Image 1 (cartoon, one colour):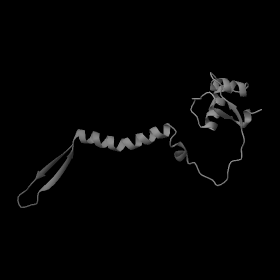
Image 2: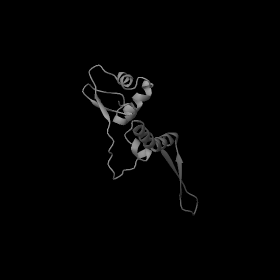
Image 3: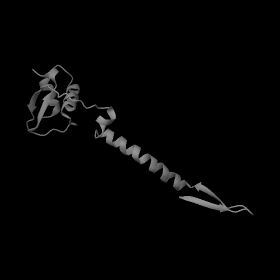
Image 4: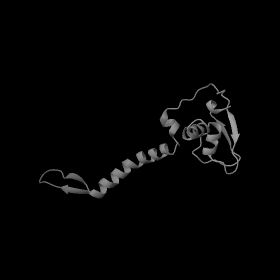
Length: 121
């Protein structure tokens, strides 16, 4: 909150003096910080990642073709990574599969996943 003090001197117009209280400072800080925190949370969740990263649209269509696999019940990304690239670190392969397919670790049976070209047969 703010406190307003009005002081009057003889023959002069009254002057207003605005003073910020501790509660008012906290409210103002929260008001300023809320949008910054909200944008940070959205960027962290990947909802505005492309816009923040500077993604640019182009008129050319992508002609890349990828090998696809279908997830079977009980299969994990780790198992898929070991199957498609037994010589590579599974964590790196999982990261590339997630990036290519726009997923964050959660896969469902029956889902088709594109495999990065360097791991395709």
